Length: 89
Length: 187
Image 1 (cartoon, rainbow over the protein chains, first blue to last red):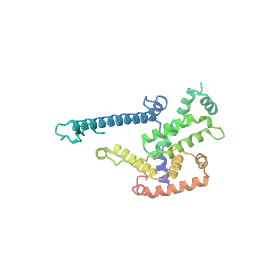
Image 2 (cartoon, each protein chain N blue to C red):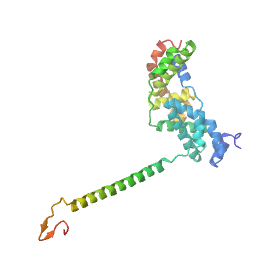
Image 3 (cartoon, helix red, strand yellow):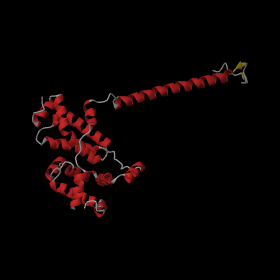
Image 4 (tube, rainbow over the protein chains, first blue to last red):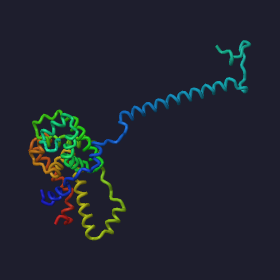
């Protein structure tokens, strides 16, 4: 191996001092939520959102159906003298 | 207090959960661990993660240290494993315009210093392009100054393997950095 490469490797890869931040990370850990707790929290939040969304959607559909059922624009259909809108079996 | 104790006593104190012993152990090995991590990963943030991971593993598995090998070798094994475990690869940043302008404006001494830094950056970039197996051998050899037999013990391979990997790494680096030699920066 050429001498220049040996010298350059030794110079460029010389050891360095660890930053103080490493000590802080080891002995004074920041108060953060552990990754597992964060993921559980995210899953729970997603489930709440999903449930709320489903409830909102079903309530919207229900009110839409109800509006459609009682809309005066709907033509009332009679079947054997019974209103099929009101008397469906 | 464990500051004056031998390595074995220090390890024993750590096993008993002595916080001072952990701190002493950390202070003793932090520079070695961080240096290997930084020279392997090439990026400070990744080196910090590797170093932290190494110490966490070291503290949590110190019970399993049987004492049949040198403790320093054991620490090196830990950091080497952490280095090889990390999957993120750093990407060399292209010098930004501000840095280029600063280089052009710099006076003679500063310019020389910047050129030296640039050469260092290129050497480190070339080392980072080596495969992990070759890179770790180069780092242990040039950052930590370990002998072939010590590297072999850390990596759990033969001295012949170490010599072969170093030879391959040297050849690759020589090929990649040949322009530095031709440029006369090493005269």
